[in-house]
Image (tube, rainbow, N blue to C red; front, side, top):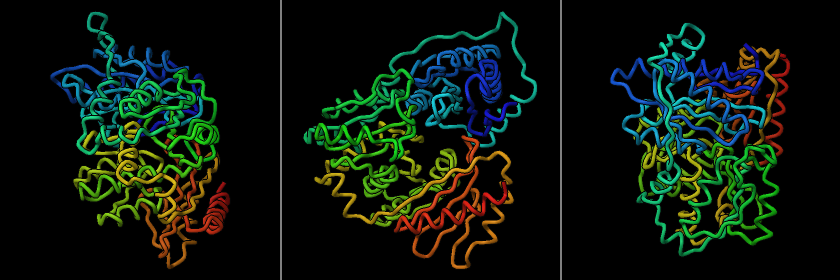
Length: 458
C-alpha cells in the first residue's frame, strides 16, 4: 500500500492516482457497506456525497459501485458540505450510514472518504477499525441479481439551512436588523452553495470571494491566518463588518475582523462557547490542541472545560457522556448539540452573527477586550521518524512544573496556562508540534525546543 494512503479509524485520505485510486475507493466503500449491513438486519440505504474536488465525481462513482456490489442501495446527495451530509443521514429514517468523498483541508492533490454512522455522526474508533479489517481482508460481494440501486436526492443543503434558522438560539430577525456586511471566502470548495443562501437568509449583504465550487483552490485550502490575505483585503476594500472563511468541505470557519485582521480559528469556538454555554450551562468539550481561549470562554460563563484526544469523534463521545451542549475543535470547528453532533461551519457563522448582534460590538472590539495568546504550529515529516522515541524524549525532558497529558501524543501545560502539544497527525504523513503562550517569543522558544527533541529521532 502506498505511503500516501493514510488509513485510520475515521476513514482514508491519499494522493489521488497514487495512494488513493478508484479501485481503492470502491473496495473501501464495500468494506464500509459490509460493516454497516452487519449492524442493520432490517436493511436500508447509504447516503453518499462529495465536496468540490476535481477528483470527486470519479471517486464518488467508485464508492457507489463498492456499496452496491455488496447489495446495498445508495442515495446520492451530490456536492454537499460535510455537515450537510451528516445531518441528512441523521434525519433520514431509512439511512443506515453515509460515505462522504472529501479530504477536508488537505491540498488539492488529495482526496479521501469519511465514514458516517446511522446516527449522523462519524464512526466510533472501534467501528472504524472494523471497516479497516474488512478492507484489508475478505469482502463478500453479491451476485448480479442482488446489486444495489443508485438514486439521486436533492435539497439537503436547503434542509440544513432551514434547521439552522429554526434553532431557538438563533434569532434571524435580530441578526437581519443589523444588516451585516459579510466578506465570504469559500476557496472554491463546497461552501458557496450553502454559505451564500444562509447568509442572505439572515439579512446579510455578501461580498464573495472564490464562491464557485469547482475545486480549483486558488490558495492553500486550510483557513489558517497566513492563507487569508485576499479575504483581509476584501474586508477592507468593501468595508465589511466581518470576514468568514471556510475550508473545502465546510466544517471549519475562520474569522477576519472589520479592520481586515485575521483573528485566528480558535476565536470561532471561543465566541460560540460564550453564546451557547451562557444559555445552556454544561461542560464544554474540546481537544488537547485547542487554544487557552476556549478555557477562558468557559470560565467567563462559569462552566467546566474538558479536553480529549484530537479527532471529532473523541470530542463527540465526551459530549455525549457529559451532556455537553457545545464543543468542538480549535481549528474553527464548532459542534452544537442543539443541531447535530458534528463540526458545522454554516452553524458557526450563524452563532457568530448572533453573538455580534447581541453584543452590539464589532468583532475587533470583542477580541481586543479579551486576553489573547500566541500560538505556533510546526510540522515535521513522518518518514524515518521514530515517533514513540520522540514522545519518550519529550516526556523525559519535561520540566517538573509542567503537567503532562499522554492521552494523544504528549501535552505539557505550565502553571500560567501556556502549553505544548506534540503528536503524529492522523490525516497527513507529518508530526505536529503546537505551542501557545502569552508571548510569541515564548511560544516559538518552546516549539523550537520540542522540534529539536523530535528531529533527533529522525
